[in-house]
Image (cartoon, rainbow, N blue to C red):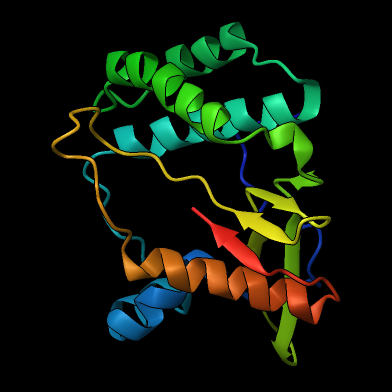
Length: 191
């Protein structure tokens, strides 16, 4: 079975000893350069206090990818993944309750099976040995649309964001740039 819960960071696609810049980190380079530098160059990891939103995002992405591949979502596989999380700080009940609602919202707004590729790794070389690249959530090359899924930490409608942080726009524009450098035209980026 496809490993729906693992992010493809390009280790197998990029040349050995190359340096990869993630599109999701581009904004951090501009907004918090020293923190980006410590993480990207020296490998210092930021302390993540609450991994529940990260795991929730993993489950929604996995379910959307399953749906793209098969037209169905294997909720047993997702629940098994949730139950396998060993971090005691992760709120498994929140994930179990929220991922189906977020997935339903995602699927109600568009059909991922109409797209052409899901979780596709793509990159381009900026300078010798330096690449920018990552895994796209979903892309429709026919309609020239790039999609990126975002989850929210709350189902309280008064707390649902009404706008997106600029980091999401940087990420989408970077992916569109990479696609353009690889010969693909993208005219729309949707979150």
